[in-house]
Every structure is written in C-alpha cells, then in structure tokens.
Length: 84
Ligand SMILES: [Zn+2]
Image: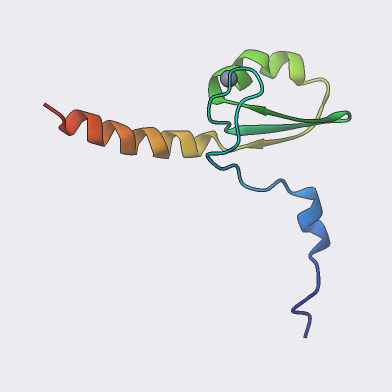
C-alpha cells in the first residue's frame, strides 16, 4: 500500500550530483546546484565561491554538496601521498 505513491516533496529536491554533472563555467565536476527563477545552474566549488555573492539576491534555492568534495579529495590525497 502506497508503494507507488509519489513523494510530492521529492519534486522540489534536486537529485544528487554525479560525476556526469559539470560546472556551467569550466566543465569541472559540479558540487553546487543553484536554482533560479529562470532555471538551474551547476557550479564547481571554485566557481560557486566566485559567483556566490552575485547569485545570492536571485537564487531561489541552493543545494550544496561541497562536503562531498572534501570526502573525495581526502580519498584522492591518500592515494597521492602513498606514491613515491
Ligand atoms: Zn567551475
């Protein structure tokens, strides 16, 4: 019962970003989704930081996954520090 019921709230939540989601500015892995009245933008951590102040007055929602960036990079540095 209710197995096929659609969670209405889910329609308002952005999906999780994947490796296929790219920054609209530079094409790097996107970590922040910004929703505007006119649509949606994706930013890498670097470009979100750069545009954050300018976006602030016009955004309707921000979905920030930059905490995952740290998880990814700590995993990456573990590998790089292990190399000779
Ligand atoms: Zn970027």
